[in-house]
View 1 (cartoon, rainbow, N blue to C red):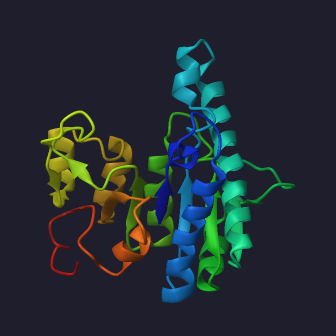
View 2 (cartoon, one colour; view 1 turned 120 degrees about the horizontal axis):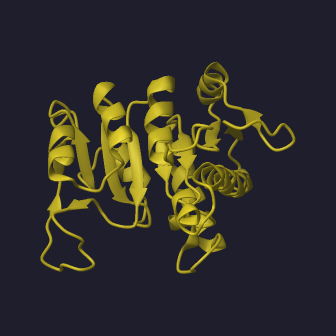
Length: 237
């Protein structure tokens, strides 16, 4: 399960989707699907277009704002599908909110069949419920489809002791347990998502998406980014 933030799609822009960044992401996915035959599901955020919490702070009803954010994820999902298909990958978009002319509904069994047939499955519209983040969606869908790992693609190469952009002396933490992340209040995923992963023993790898071959390197077990688990996966990595 790959979790892509909507903000990452902006590239160097302030809003929307940067074509070059979108193409780079599609290339990353192609490398693991076409060359390593890995089953890939993707949950994409919508923060490059609208974030429910932010618009609610501007006076929009919180539930309405969250639904706006879910629709934003669908715009990103369709753009990503197009980029993947242009690279020759077979891809399906599933949505937690019914929109038959745009995408098929999220059905767990159908998603698993798509993955087994080598198709990339992009899961949009979050969980279909307000008050839940797309991080929680990624953790939930990962549990539902039996994903081996959640790959949290970010703009930094792992979890640090402090914000590396503000604190140059901050150190990357190569390995943490779920409880360490919760107790130290580190910003990895929201607590609901992290707890879901902990309950289902789904490891999380936080890494820099924009590094060359980053998804492939994680899949191959290279020591990049930060691994978050219950402490029992270190040797296998």
